[in-house]
Each structure stands twice: as C-alpha cells, then as structure tokens.
Image (cartoon, rainbow, N blue to C red):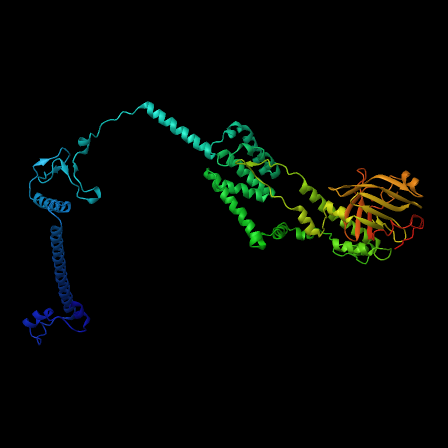
Amino acid sequence: DTTATLDEPNVLDPSFTSDQDNNGDDDNAENVLDEEDLLELVAQKMDEKRQREELERKAELKRKRQERTMQQESNDQKFAGPNDPLSKAMKYQKMKDQSQNKDTTTSLNETTTGIGGAYIKNETAMEDKYRPTRGSWGYFERPKDISKAYGGGRKIVADDAKIRESSEETRDKLRAYREKVGIIVQSEKDHANEIEEALRIGNLAMQRGMYSTAVSALEKVTKWCGSNSKVGGKVFLELAMAYEAVGRTDEAIQVYSTLTTCRIEDIKFNAKRLLYGIEAMNFMRNEAKAKDFSRKKVQQTFIDTTGLANIAENFDDRYNTAYVDLDNGFYRKLTESVVRSNREARQILLQATDAGIVPRLKIVQALRSLSRTYDTALEAEIKAAAPKEEPVVIMNGKPILRKEEDELSTALLDQEFILASANQMIDNMEGEWKLQLLADKKGDGVKFYNSTLSWQNLDSDAMEFNSFGPVGFLTVSQSGKMNFNEERRIINWSGVQSSGAGGFLASVMSGSSGSGPQSTPQQVMSVDSTLLITRAVQSKKTKTDENVKEFFSVWRRVVPGTYSDASGSNANTSGEIKL
C-alpha cells in the first residue's frame, strides 16, 4: 500500500533504486546520487505509482458499472415484454447512439437552407410520429408536425359584438363589487364639494393648532363618507388625528381600528402605524407605568428645558417669598379653620351646639365645604340623568360612541360625599327637628339656637309640615303643604297658615329670611338620622359672591312629639326647651 509505505519512516520502495544498484558500485563515488537528485527521483516514482493506481481504479469502476447495466437490462427483459415502452425507449436510445457513432465517419452530402447549416438524415427515425425520450413530456406517440396535423396557424376572427358585451358585463360586475365593499360611495360623489371644503378647513385648523375646529368640520361630513373609499378614508384618518390631538383617545382608537381594514393601502398603512403609536403610549403609561411617559415627567422636562425653574436668576432684584409668618393672626386663624373632608365637616357640626365649643369661622368653613361637594355631586347627577345627544359622527352606518366618564362616581369617590336619592331624602326627613344654628354664607356669622326654641315637624307621607319659631321679638306657628323638587332637592312651602303673636308680622315680613322657619325655599344638602342641613335658595338677582345672612340651617332630630305635642301656651310663649 502506498499510504503505508509513505507512513513508514526511512523506508524506500526497492524499485526506486533498483537501476542504480545494478549499474554501479556503492564504493564508486561518481555513481552515487546526491541528496537532491535522490529526492526528485523518489517524487517521480511516487507520482507514476499514483497515476497507475488511479487508472486501475477507474477501470475497475467502469467494469462494475457495465456489470450493473447488463444486470439491469437482463432484469428489465426478464420482467418486461418486447413491446414494453421502456424496452422500446432503450432500444431507440441504443440505435441513436450507434447512429451518432456512425455519423462521425460519414460525409456531409445534404445541407439545410440556413447559413452554414448541415445535417445527416436519421434513417432510423419515424417519419410521421415520434415518441419523446424524456418522461416529463409524456411517453406517448405524437405527430412530428402538430400544426399540420391539427390545423395550427389558422387565424380565428373574433366577434366584436361579443367582445363588447363581455367587456360591459365585466365592468358592471366590477362596479357592483366596488359599491358593495364601499370603494365607490355614491353619497361622496353627490357631496363632493362639502367634503372637499371640510378637508380644507380641517387641514388649515390642524396646522394652526385649532384641533376642536378641525373635529367640528370633519364630523359634519362623516355621514356621507365610507371607510373603504379613498376620499372617505382620508376624511376619517384626518378626523382620528384630530381626536387624538384634542385628547379624545378612545374615539381615535375606534377610527384607527376600523381603518386598518381599509381597501386603500396608503390609508390602511397609516392607520396601523398611528394606532400602534397610540396603543404603545397607553401601554407605557398605564400598564408598564414607565416614569418617562407620565404627565409629571413631561411637565418637569418642559420646565427644565425652558428654564422656568430658575427664571428668577435672570433678574437683579429678587425677593424671598418662601417665608410666611404663621404667627400672624390672619394666617393662623385661616390655617386652624381649614376643613379637609366631609367627614370632618359633619363632626364639626355635631359638636357645634353652643357658642365657644367650635370656632364660628370653622363652622362656616365646614358648611361651605359641604356645599361645594354637594354642588359637584348634584351637577354630576343631573348631567348623568339628562338625555344623551345623538352622536353626529357616523362611520360605515354606525355611530362613533364617545366614552362618557362616570362623573358622579368620580365626584363621590374624590370628595367622600354620599348624595342620597330624592326618595331617600324624603323618607329621612320624616320626623321632628329642632333648629341648632343658622350661619352666613361667608365670614364667621353664626347664630346658635340653644336657648331659643325653633322646631318643625315634617310629614313625608302627607307632604305637610308644622313649625314654630321666632319672628323678630315675637313667635309664630305655621302649617301647610310642602313640595319637593326631586331634581334639585328643593323644598317649597305652599298654603302656609300662620298663627300666634307674630302671625300678622310674619305675613308682612314674608319676603325676609327671618320671618319664620318656612319663609323661603330650602335646598336639602344632607339628611340622616341626626342632622338635617339645608341652605336658602337664592334669587337670580343675588350675586354669587355676595354674602347672605342666615344662609345655612342645621337642624337636629328630636323624639317625635317633643315639641309638637306640648301645650301651646307653654311651648309658644315661654320659649323654653322642654325635653
């Protein structure tokens, strides 16, 4: 083996040096080869040996291939008959190879009509039919000239009428399809001028930052547009961007989501891109809680960028306004009177039964705090109960619904104020109440009724009342009907009959706030098992910031019959409280 021979160290093939050994003597220095010639001779002999072995290997492979071919032919002849297509193909291929070998020694006697072309007629080829040699073309006989056999090359004259009819039918089907999917919208053609004007106004408004104007202009033409058409898709895309600019994110997401299936590729691509942006922003802000996307972070970045935090350093005269003298009487009094919650306000009113227990300013602040939260909750309730306006934005025949925030729940949650329903208030007002105090709308004006008797008995079932209270230096008893405005929680008195020493004076002073407990309509702010808090209903002529005397009323519940069943002479003349 050549490989084994080369691997053995210091071993040479005897044939390499046989000639030198026979023709010369080892002792003769002239016949001894030098080292370089010897290495060259060894390399030559090794190359000759490799070539000889390569030829032997190729001859062996060719012999084995011929044996396999002969074996395959014998097997095919054994299992296939002489008329088998495979046998015919092999026979034809063998004849073709023999013909090609024969053509190499034959002179070229015939030439083609082409330039420089020549051919030898194949005597073994079929004249009329032939069978393809490649199986991919189908192994079956076919004419050599298909055009002549089957009439190829003939000119077929088309019927122009049928062509026109077919074209019209195709156009009608395409038009019907486009109208069905919304690519063609007839209303867009009918109102093309209005839509074009709305787009122009919307573009100008968006460029100038007047986003609400853009929304208003584009919303008016949505009823004529479709989301799959080119013009309608542009209108809705502009509208969605205007919604996003004004902060109506939910509506913008609705429009973007619908446009992601638009038939116009540009509209669909832009809608998907903008929808991804707004959803990514919401995710980072609400789900991931990333600080860089929070509103406070954005505000602080703006302040740092513009330098507003250090704006005072740009002026020569700077004053330190961070110091406030809390020992000063006004600031100290104001700080001590702050009411921070409705629960604290109620506790203050429960304690304020006499002068000196609770500061008067703090009592007024507690009532004002309740009044503010009551106004917020009442307006939210009225707004929620109001009939909803029909949406004017129509997209594909469906309105774009605007997400309404639950303002009532938000107000109650933020302010911890529980606004009772109208029916609940009427039920809670049932019973007998003693006037605890009257307070002004502003300032520290508070009048306590711990030594002066004033009470009222309310019958919620019959909607009637009885009351007793002072009018000037006299007292008066009143009775009549009461009407309750469920929307605004206002009690109006009707059919009031006055009696007692101050009855005549009460009729004369019926327009003043001091003419008896039921002299003016009262708005119920809160009523529970202990307190009934009301405020006077102001006339339209009264200014909002104007102070009103005896504006707030605080009543405390007493046992039924404590004053209403007492002797008229004892209860109405002495003015003493009999418990």
